[in-house]
Every structure is written in structure tokens, then in C-alpha cells.
Length: 304
Image (spheres, rainbow, N blue to C red):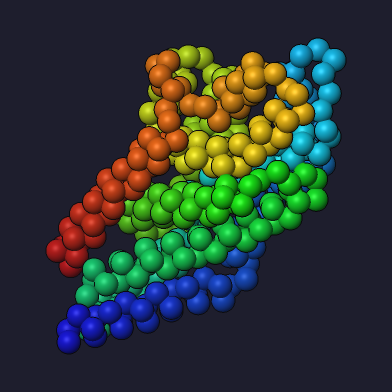
């Protein structure tokens, strides 16, 4: 009976936190604006730069269907945007928890007949749902763009992209939950969100391929679990386009060069990491973060 009552309280708190987020339309807009700006900048200014980068891997004078080129550049960008946004959006959308600390709502919850652990779990679940909704909206917008310029993603890969979004969102939400458990001011939230937004895309290889880095730095950054969130996205977004390029007659050597130069293939100290291992590393990091989050929640509630 007690467990049932606590479960109902948890569901109520999750609903309350989620409604608080979406009630402020500006918060949802802010969560969407950065990735949408990146997509607009790509479509208007950077598209030809990316296309030329892919063309440089082809034999001299070799041409392919323009829709395949337009599509693969868009797919590379979408894999970058979604893998990074799963973390940056999670940090921004956790604003409900920070606002409750600032406004004193959290203290009100603690004097009510609701366990502190239940309150913390509700924040986590709500943040996961909010981030996932934003991510699926971004995916839909990106897929509309890819359908317009050149869609070569098989149905199985399209389904796996949703699985990838779920995994990356879980990682981002857990990371945000651990870090932001120690933040209790709007300034602290802004500082952390700005830092994550400006740095994360680079250190996980989303905005700049690791092939552009020195070998030592590349090996260090490939030890970070977020790198493999990008890696699984890259594989499912771009494999169909690589098959299409192969059907266009692009040599296997050129396809292998694209795989390595654009981080579809990830190597650590010269060893290629298979796709299954990428999932294992990412989900293993989620398990570690979950343990850290549970520990933080328990310790914080013991001190109350």
C-alpha cells in the first residue's frame, strides 16, 4: 500500500514538473533554438563546405548524384546536432529543479508527506521526458530536411536512430542530474549550461571530426563516453548514404576514407571500436552515472 501511494505521488510530481516546463513556452523555444540555428546555418552557409569535404575523398573527376551528396552532408550534421543536443538540452531543461530551489518550492515539498528520494526521482524522470520530446521534435525537423534534399536512410536505421536518441537522452539526463544536483542558483545553471553548450560538441567530436585532431588528443577524447553517442548516431544516419555512394560507383577506398575522416569508424590507439562496443560503453557510462546520481540523492536526503 505504501509503495502504491508513493508511486502515485511520483507520477503526480513528474506531471507537475513536466507541465511547469512546457507552461513556459520560452523555455521550449530556448531548448530548440540552438540546434535549429545550426541547421539553418548549415543549409544557408556551410552546406557547400561539407559537400566539398566529402568530394575530396572521391577520385579526381568523379561525380555522383547530387541528392546523395546533399543527403549525406545533412545526415552528418543531424547526427552531430542530435547527439550534442541530448546533453545540452538536458542541462537546460533541468531548470524546473533549479527554479524550485530558488523559489523555495523544494522546501515546501520536503515538509509535505513526500519522501526526498521520490522528489529527486521525479525531477530526473521529468527531465528525461522533456529532453526526449525536444529531441524527437528536432529529429522530425531534420528528417523533413533530409527528405527534401535526399533520403537514403533504410527503415531499420530510422528505427535505430530513435533507439540512439533514447540512449543519448538517458546519458545526457543522468549527467545533468549529477552535475546540477549541486547547483542552487540561476547564475550557476546559466554558467554550467553555457560551458556545456560551448564545449561538449567539440570534445565529443560532433562539430569537428577527430581526424582533424592530433593523434594523442584524439585518443584521449575517444575515451570519453559521449564520443560513442556521436558514433552510434553517425553509423545509423550515414550507412544508407554510404551504400548509395557505393551503388554510384564510388571506390571502396574512398568509402573507407569517408568512414575514417568523418568518424563513422572510431579508433582508439589504432583499434577500431565496433558498433556493439559503442553501445556498451555508452550504456556502461549511464550505469555509472545512475549509481552516482543515486548516491548523491541518498547523501543529500540523509543530511535533511
